[in-house]
Image (cartoon, rainbow, N blue to C red; front, side):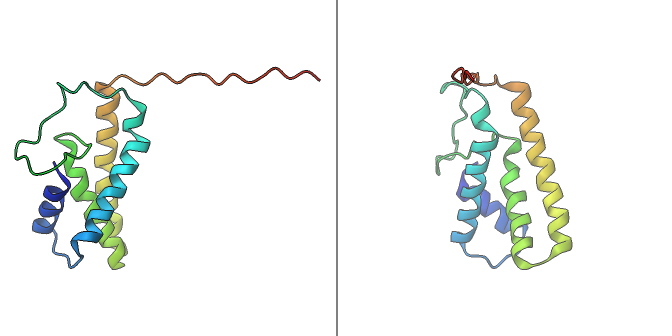
Length: 126
């Protein structure tokens, strides 16, 4: 899924008055968060295994299908938060967190973890 497609799907399913730029910034923030918290922990699949964008309408987002609805759920939670609707935000945030956890478990099952090099500290003599 591309950013434009995620925002379009969100606009079709959730009535909102937020401009495209705000939604784009929210999705870009989530992409950075996914990269820092999840995808950086695992070895990336080879270029041949990477899914292609069938419609050719932009750069694909990081979350693979069927976990790509994560972006729509995130936008729903964030717009509820920005609107100040606490009850709706709690519900939509729970739905987003479930989708985030599902993606994290998928990566854990299907990808190899990066090796972390041990930090060697110099010997200290007292």
